Length: 197
Image 1: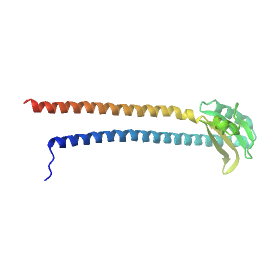
Image 2 (image 1 turned 60 degrees about the vertical axis):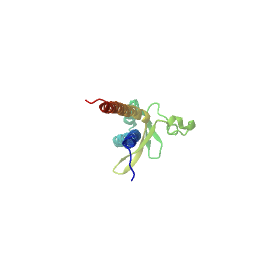
Image 3 (image 1 turned 90 degrees about the horizontal axis):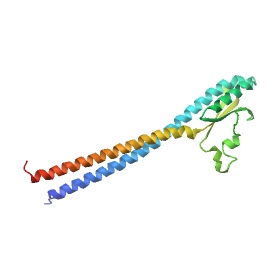
Image 4 (image 1 turned 90 degrees about the vertical axis):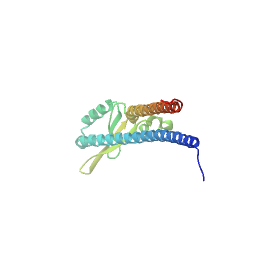
């Protein structure tokens, strides 16, 4: 019959607990990284949806001015949009693609999408949003906004990263306190064998 000594059983149990603890730590760190990536993706999708909603609203407001060829309100609107910190420029186009109104200091479309700069450097961190200007299915033109998408994401990324760092620090602190408690209990267990009380 096979028998295991108490000492070997205790040693095996301790190694099992130690391996389980390290596996749990690794799993938690992996989960925190996965959670961080999911949050970044959700953030990107949310900002994209909000930007699309904004361009559709602006496009709906610009319909009458474009039909009447009254470009002054469009120019005012484009310049106001370009003063926002998250918008680089705004442009209105006719249905044939000819620009009608551009905000002051607006980049040409070829530059904004990175076709004229080496490696597309001018377009990095920026997102082009284009929406038709229409009413009841009658499309008469387009609105193009260049968003400083990177600056929108950067602030939120810093907050997410700060939260993940705090989570990891708390996890490390919990592990340290658990190790101290375990050491105290083991020392107490050894003392109780030596001392009768």
